[in-house]
Length: 115
Image 1 (cartoon, rainbow, N blue to C red):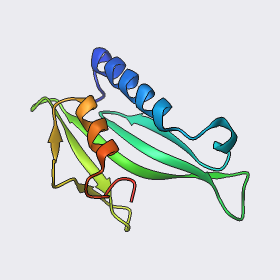
Image 2 (cartoon, rainbow, N blue to C red):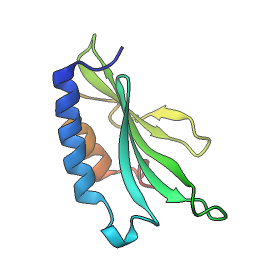
Image 3 (cartoon, helix red, strand yellow):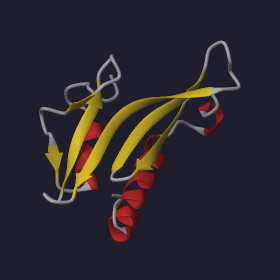
Image 4 (cartoon, one colour):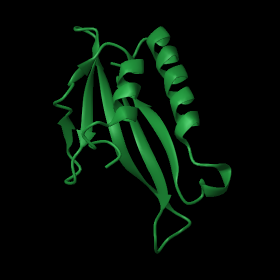
């Protein structure tokens, strides 16, 4: 099940503003860029870089993930371990709004997201 339209629009607006604020300058975006994607009820913030031996191809490295739980009306927060498995963010596993999620990722008090 995907997010409802109003929540999707709010989420996109918050994420667009956040990504615009933290993206590298235009000159560097071919070397590193930051983006996000919506996947049903989840959002993933990621870094995008070219492969070392194949600079025409890019790979994405996930930074943070939030999944909306409609029954509880909150977002579950995840970080990705070095084994590429998503782990619940124990210091604050749930937030009420996407703004709070972005603030957690930005603060990164425990160096889980931008490590």
